[in-house]
Image 1 (cartoon, helix red, strand yellow):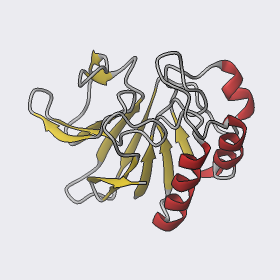
Image 2: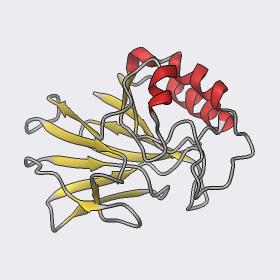
Image 3: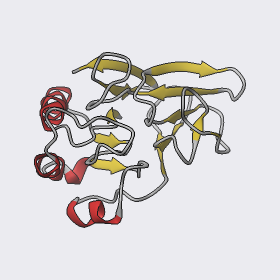
Image 4: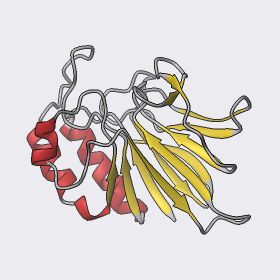
Length: 182
């Protein structure tokens, strides 16, 4: 199973267009969106390319491949305009194709469930062996093993408002995560 994982677009249309090009080039089975898709929120500056209606159009064009979770900037109106479910606090994907048995991905934004890295909440779900917590919210890339929880921790960074200097997304394939710059 191959996934493109993105978070924190925040209505940045040019960034979303670059992400859409990356999705086309990567050819994933599914696209995971970890919330904060359309709005910049009160703590962020308005992106220079802020155009949420354009972002809606782009994301709806791939709605049949999207698995999404709610970020702290999502509202009910977002669900009214997006063609895929986006209001769950978390989602779970199981990849049965990984050598050694299934691999579980716990997908969340990072404000309700999270690993406690940077400004994400420190609230871990119960995870089986061979798991990862995949989250956004902090706008900072992370890819490492949590020795305390025995799970991989992955944050793709932010496509729209990166706080570590580079817009990015992630790719998951065969039990491995990688960051890619936009």
